[in-house]
Length: 123
Image (cartoon, rainbow, N blue to C red; front, side, top):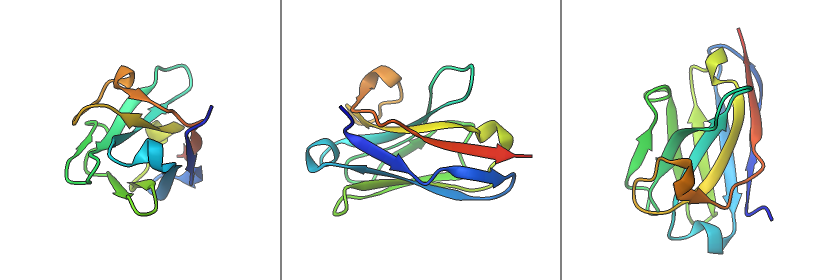
């Protein structure tokens, strides 16, 4: 059962930007930390960014810090990932999920995964 739906992926060139969206139900979204993960071909899924239930606290992986910005609109039950200065190493299937605790960064601390949205960055 899919609890959240990611969108906004696409094929872009290095240096371009994209904004991903993650829409969820009230039961899944409200009151929970939400996070973004990504999985490149042949690699394990990795943490990208997280945001607390009220949007006050955010966290990023070192590989995206300073380029990506996570945000959320609780009224719309939607989370976003603004991705700037994309490079080919950002090519991956991007997932959103619901996290437990205030600063979850491990995949096992998340549930209610979506099916992902593909981001492909050409050089």
